[in-house]
Image 1 (cartoon, rainbow, N blue to C red):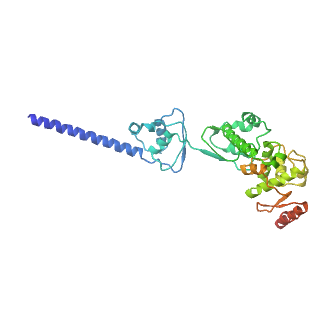
Image 2 (spheres, rainbow, N blue to C red; image 1 turned 180 degrees about the vertical axis):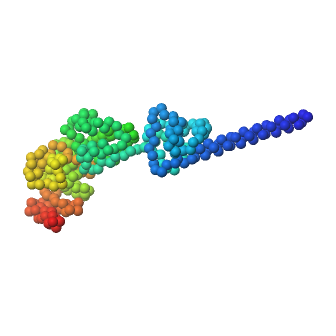
Image 3 (cartoon, rainbow, N blue to C red; image 1 turned 135 degrees about the vertical axis):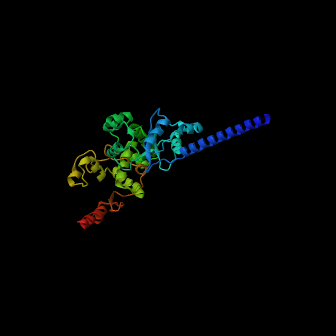
Length: 345
């Protein structure tokens, strides 16, 4: 009897162990299946976790939207991987194909989605305003309607923001303020301009009284050409004109002075109109930049080539032909402008 009782205890113990192991294995299997289920998504989606929101609330929302299967295994998953429960507030992009475990890990890592906005070289402040107003997940948009308040907050003493913001691609997270983004653009431009101004040539020092004047000239160069190899040569034309007190006579300044009236054409009356930006009328530089120049145009403004050119005209393919005399220039105008116009007609 004694031996039989001991055997019974052993057998019962083994059965209990086996049941426990089987139960443990079942739980692990179910939790693994739950964690590795792919989210049912057809395209990337943005998920915003608000401050204080729990992982249970997030997954409940996902179940309601049909992204994951109904299950009560989340608590077991968090016991095995407690780090998955420490999700952080923010806006995240969840890609199709991610498993539930991977998606929760993404939220726990705090790798918020980076939105982007690109401002091209030669764009104007008006263009920036329009782009920012259409950008998603930015805050403080009301500042875009108050230029004077913006100047104060950016600590800018110039009359407007034109030219003072560096054109580039900027990345930001949801909830970033317009002001914070513009502060970055202004600081970047200040840094690029300061470096270029410190390395200016003697010619630039003679004709430009400040880095702001260099920025004005750079904005004109930016609007005149997109050709990398031409910028410093076009800069030399303007420096040569400044040296001889010859008017700059550049169309982009006239267009800027016309504002919203510009319809794609410049007429003779427009060239005679006395605006602060009409360089066919005024001598020297206009009062402010006419666009946001890039680094290459800024460097060209302060480091012009040495040349005897006073004129240039577009070939119609984005490049320009340069000339030293008015007679040569007029001949080039007839060849590249008037002939092209008559051909179109």
